[in-house]
Amino acid sequence: MTPDLILEGAVWLSLGCFGLSLLLCLYRVVFSTALPDRILALDTMTINVIAVFVIVGIAEGTPVYFEAAMLFAMVGFISTVAFAKFLLRGDIIE
Image (cartoon, rainbow, N blue to C red; front, side):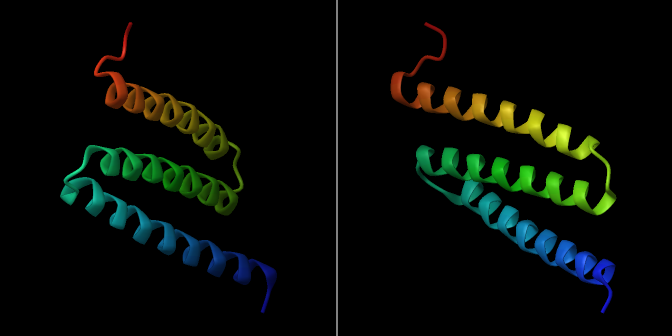
């Protein structure tokens, strides 16, 4: 087996695993009754999307996906902090 074939198989396997994880988190967001569970599922979805961006960047060999993953990570962190602050205080802006 060539290294390119092994890399391609690993990329497809990892994309399938992260896709399944995204679907399970989406199920948790839609059918959960508690707001903290939904926030945690959205944060987990953010992490999974970052991983998908990095995997696609490795497969394509272009740095554009890595920059998109970095931007998505920053926005995901800010949104998680905002959700948590809203959950604790009921207000985001003081």
